[in-house]
Image: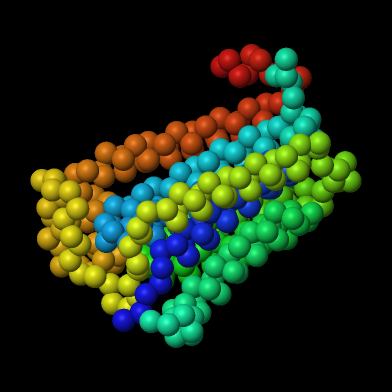
Length: 102
Length: 209
């Protein structure tokens, strides 16, 4: 009987989330920032699936399905907003989108 | 089991390769200046995570991951990159802000927090090979009885489908479907507003109507 420790999956998910968060904070291109959000959502679903496997509770996989649907919704609305902003600003730099700055 | 024997097991090799591929591709995705190449590295990461899903007996999730993420989300990204002609970043985007290293440090602290949380406590070990057939009744609830009693193996599409449409998950499913419709309407409104903007100067009357 062979075993794969659950910690491997948790470590990978933590690394993916960290890379996504660091990229979201450092990059200024709004498209890359949206891709980093996708990365963070994927790492969250990886943790859910690993926990579902460890506890043999299939509800974790159901939540992973919901997360994938949520990510699709988020990227559809986000990219529509990016296109709308780009038509006004001609830029994908988030630093130019500072009209609400006090 | 000794460490050498454990490290030479085939499933460990698969999980290690997929994990390294996911992490390295994610770093490449974040660091690339070319957005199109970043999107292609994102594809690599998502496929590696799908391989990890397969090793976790989540075949359906892996297939849905590849179909939805790679087939829809990344293609949408590539469409928008091509549409906006934003493939190459201008040089003005290259000089990072002053908070760059501070945010990297905060992300590293986040990583330490996750690892400390994930590695504390006694986590169960995962069993490779045949999936368990009888999930233990974790919490006795009357609505979950049909899921527990199902004869389908863990993680099979029939098993996930039964859990998806069970009484405790079906409300969430309906909310997600409403969210999808709301997002579709929102995107249509955004696109419609764009067309009025590009045609005429006074857009307020059109938007009100």
